Length: 480
Image (cartoon, rainbow, N blue to C red; front, side, top):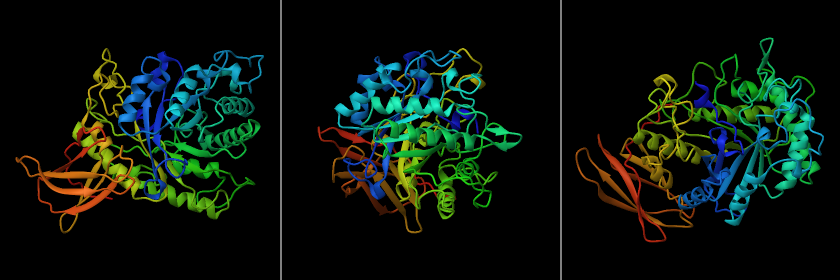
C-alpha cells in the first residue's frame, strides 16, 4: 500500500507546513468524561488537517466542526515544529523541560479554542524530531534520544496539563516517522518505540501527571518487510513476545489505556481483509488486533481487554483514480466502516481523516499529481462532497434474507430525535417510507424491504429548523 494511503503526515505548527499537519477532532464519550455516551462508549474522531493550527483557517474551521457535531480535537504535536534550533546538531543550552523553551503559540490557540467550547483535547507527541534530539544527529527520525523526548514531554504536559489523552508517536512502524525499522533483517523499531513510550510516561510524571491516560501504538495498517513493519509484528516487538506470543526477554508489563491504530483500507472497501500477511490490520480485519492484544495480556505484558482507539481513518476519493473511489462510494464506504466500528464494543474511537483534501501538485505528471490525501469531506477548493452530509448523517445498509438492515446516526443530536427514511427504486424519485426515533446517542436501526437497484437516504431537522438531507446510499453485502 502506498505510504500516503497507510500513513498520516506529522503536524507542524507553522502555516507553511500545513501539508504535514494532522489535527483530529473527536466526540469523546465514556473514555473522556463529560461527553454523551455512544454505544459501548465509542467516540468519533475527526481530523481537519492543519487548519486548527493556522490563524488563517482556525475560526472558520471551528465553526464548521461545530456544525458537524464535533466536540473535541486531537492534535499531533511534531517535536521539531516546536523545538528551539530544530536543525542544529547540538542540544540548545536551555531548560528543555520548560514550556518557555518551545514555541507553543499556535498549539495553545487551538487548545484554548477547544476548551472555550467545552471540548476535549487529545495530544499525540511524535516526529519529526529536532536533529539534536537524535543519536548521531543524522536526520529527524533516526534513533530519537529518549532523555530529550522525556524532557519534551514534560514541557508539553506542563504547558497543557488539562489534556485528556496522550498518544505516543504517529505510525512508529513506518520509516517516514521512525528509523531504523529493521537492523540486519530483524525489526528494530519496536524496541526503540517501547523506550520512547516509557520515556513519555516518565516525562508526564515529571510534569505532575503520573496518572495521565496514555495510548500505545498509533500503528499504520500494513508492513512490507523492508521499510515498514506489519502492525502485529510491531506489537509483538513492543511487548517482547515471539511469533507465538510467548515471552522473550525480561520486559516489564506496560501501563497503557489503549492501543491506537490506523486501519486504512484499499479501494476495495471497508470489508477488505489482507491475505498476503496475517499481521496486517485493515478496517475489515480489526479482529486480528483484538486477538493479538488478548494474547499479549495473557502473556502478562499489558492489562486485559485493552481498548482499541482508531485514531485515523479515511476513504480516498476521486480525482485520484489510482487510490480513490467515486464520491458517492466514498461516503458509502465511510459510513460502513463507522458501522463496523460502532458495533464492536472493543473499539473505543472511530475517526475521519481530513475535512478538506490536500491540494494536488498540478504541475506534476498524473502519477505524481496527488502526493497527499483525497479523503476529505470537501475538495481542496472547498466544495462539499456527498461524504460531508454523510458524516453528519451516516447511513449504512446491509442486505438480509428478508430485506435490508439500516443503521444510522444523527451526529449533532444532543439526545433522542427523529429521522425520516426515504427510499427510491431505480429511475424513481425518493419517497418517505419510515420515521425513526433515535436512541439518546443519536443512533438508530431499522429493517425494511429491499429490491435490486433500490437506494435510501435520511432527512433530519436540526435545532435551528434546517432540514439536513443525507446522501443516497445502496445496500452493500459484508464480503468478509
